[in-house]
Amino acid sequence: MHRTHREVAPFDPEIERALRRQRRNTPHQEEQEIWQPIEEILIELPFEEEIAENEPNRRILRDFALPETQGSQTSIARPMVNANNFEIKPSLIQMVQQSQYGGNATEDPNSHLSTFLEICDTIKFNGVSDDAIKLRLFPFSLKDKAKIWLQSHPPNTFTTWAELAKAFLNKFFPPEKTARLRMDITSFSQQEGETLYEAWEHYRELERRCPHHDLLDWLVV
Image (cartoon, rainbow, N blue to C red):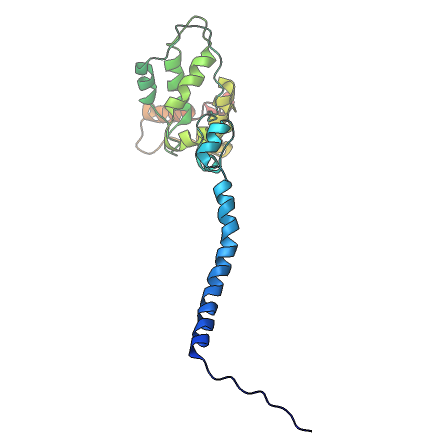
């Protein structure tokens, strides 16, 4: 049985060049076919400006990356004031700022409160409570770590002056500091070379730094 052999077609350089061109063009055509429907979708999508015009209450993606100031509130809930003529003068704010408390270990929070209350006692307005004045002025009396502490609380945390003053002392005059000063008071003794008057002044200074020591008289005399 004899097999028949096909004759091999002669090499045609024009056909070979045509095939190469087709291979080069095919990926580009497929890429165009993939991107064409995506481009059509993008064209149909509305721009952010159009969304803002058509739906003014709708937030676009860019809005979520911007800081908001409208909802910013302080940790102090200031009482309402019915007096129309109530105004805290800039000179009063400057007076409070002259004795600012920063929260350092060398500062005395009790002394700061005493100075602040002395200033507040000089201010009286008809129809304005003492709490309304104190709660508005107290932030101006703080700086540095103390200011950061006040701002770290959630909005409207403090509604009365008593709450704010208690939280302030709990933060900057903790129980361990009270215990240490109580020990200094009960173990006080006159230093060598110190006069009786100087020793007494030194002792009174310890009591002043810890007015809430609650020690009985027979323990401290």
